[in-house]
Image (cartoon, rainbow, N blue to C red):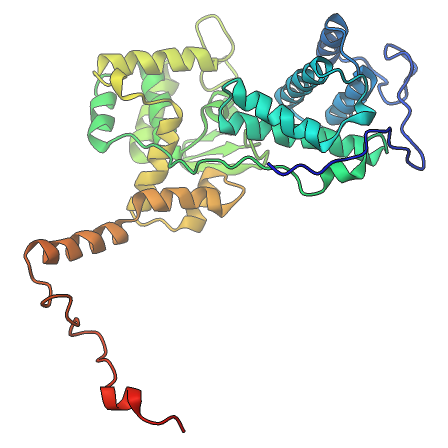
Length: 366
């Protein structure tokens, strides 16, 4: 990997950012109100003897002010904690002296630890966000943001559940709540987190739709539509559920059903249907919905809106998986090949235009 060297001396900008000497000061204008979770995470830096806490503190509170999700803030902190631990092992003592080589070797370190490419790429993206924050405050050298490092990711196709397996799987689900939950995931393409966060006020049986006020990833609202079988399963569940509960799905003695509990139920039904060995996950239900809609002729642009994808390129992955036109063209051509109906030894197909006569090819150029 080509490394662009950056001077090791501290970058001296016009108006450098000066973090508070005491990161616990209640008077810090940038952190007017302490957040228990952020303070707990910052305490981990002190416990490990890591430098850079004032900068990390300011960065995390800035994310909170920008209304980032708690999980986003936590994941950013985990990345920074791992990075700072790595810098400490290398003998670094401040963030002002980090170089492009430090970023590069950190990525290689994560790869050597066996981290998956997607994980490494995500951590690199979060790390660059922090570096941008430092550069904007003239703490780090601007050259760190030139020719950013990239981790090449495999373009894996989304995995859908085989049609025969879908029927086999649904046949073993008798519990009204679980059947409604699985069919909603299968027919709406909702993410499991979005479905578990759905309130009864967002369900409209008359119009056969569920309003997703804020998408789990993009934070953009959309509408999910209910198929006939999903609507029927949901109607059965609504007759049995506790009307006092706010969430559409809830656990025993709990106001909502958690992801772990939903996954346990899903795995239980896979085992009951004899499909546990196939490695299906809850997210495969979303992939299956998208695949079946495309196979039924839905346009990519429409599917993009239904799934809540921010980019149509994400939706296009399903087209690579389910392009029936390409499939039909292949088998039509292969049938000709297998029957030996090719035109001689690679002779011209009758539908192709004839090659120019030799006399035309060799005639003098005007």
